[in-house]
Length: 460
Ligand code: BG6
Image (cartoon, rainbow, N blue to C red):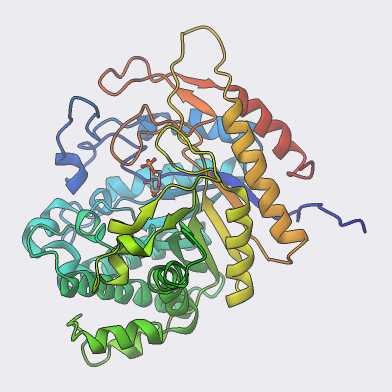
């Protein structure tokens, strides 16, 4: 049996970033403060003020992407750059920056994808409104989103709202939603989650009513969970966690309502998630053109470690274990290409909606000696095996996949502002506390990816 592995001509290959991890320029051209801008540096990590200064260096970065034959770049439009205090005046200079960036992409044949929120709540709304705890913040986000959509609809066809939306249905929500006060209860977690889903649903409906040719989808942090053993309670915990933190959202994006197992849990535990008349009608308008996600690793759960009565949203706080069958990087993130294939195939089988992995990569600590090329063979192996696994999902399992975007393929500080955890195929010459010259230096993986994409990934 011979199976063709020729990639579709319109397949997207590219890079993916967030604003605060990339742009720098935290206080110029009228940008307001976000919660990230006021996070102090520590002895290990830097602040977010400079990142890799792409605000001023985007031409150089886009040239690098173009020379690798990339045809998509996922950026974020920062809320506090466009609406400095979150709900007041629009900052035309902020929009003008994204005009320059988007136009520079289009000039090079690079298709933009825009994400509207990546953990960086405008500081004013965090202080005044407790972030997404308040419906005022939902309205302010929808207003910001509509403005950006109207502004770019003629040039940007791919849109997502919340980066890794399922994190808003876990304890991580209290770090990424502008939450400044409260008891971190399940009521608060479910309320913020519901508010963000209402925001997503309103923008989803807006796009589909006003701009029929745009593609709009949800986005998850997909870290599939294996049971630690074949014991039924491990298997049950893994299944339940997946249902709550992944399928509950996918069902909402695709079918327009929360999952019935989650709704039953809410009812049985009297969880007050601020459901108001009309909310379910808003949710019902959701329609996903694709399901997108980040995938770095898989994890493993041991049900015996989870205290009785723990909400499924919190299982990973207690039950996580390492997986002796998998290698891992220095941060103990497993390397699991077959997990990637399983996920892609499973998502497509369940929902029959095109799937789109828009973050994938491996963090490695690397130091450039100023002279020699960085030989990042581990990164080459990681991407090669994951792309091959994705192609197995497409050509052997029959999944429809729109593209493959690597995360931070030009080095950016990791999510805890640590540039020493690098994902790039291009090195950026800075350390945590020394900006040096921010020079971009291709690693060995750059040339490998360039050769692969020149042939549209056909050779894997
Ligand atoms: C994703 C986030 O969770 O993973 C990014 O969207 C983050 O912001 C990326 O940088 C990699 O995680 P980390 O912690 O290694 O930077």
